[in-house]
Image (tube, rainbow, N blue to C red; front, top):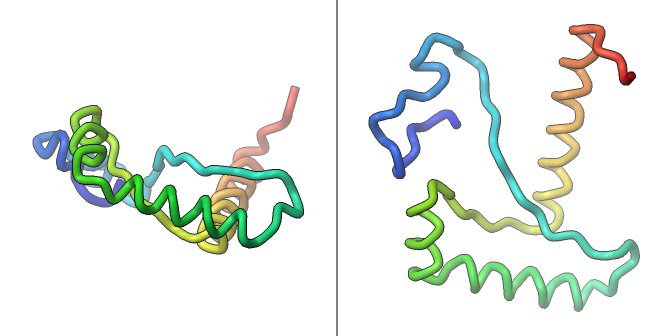
Length: 99
């Protein structure tokens, strides 16, 4: 993460530890079958947003080092594409191959 975690503010970021430009995030997404109706997607997304906004859940998640966030399906799609592009580029630069 580019910022220190509120759960462990004494732990430096990777950049602060001497590796600038490195960023790796653990993330979770909720996925539905292809061609799910938009109203179902919207309803579930709104429900997840409401759940993640609950202060008690936020406290519980922060105790285990998680920093919950919520986004839209379009934002998740953009994020996943960017992550795929980033890791694909790195794999090519390192000439990694699937065995």
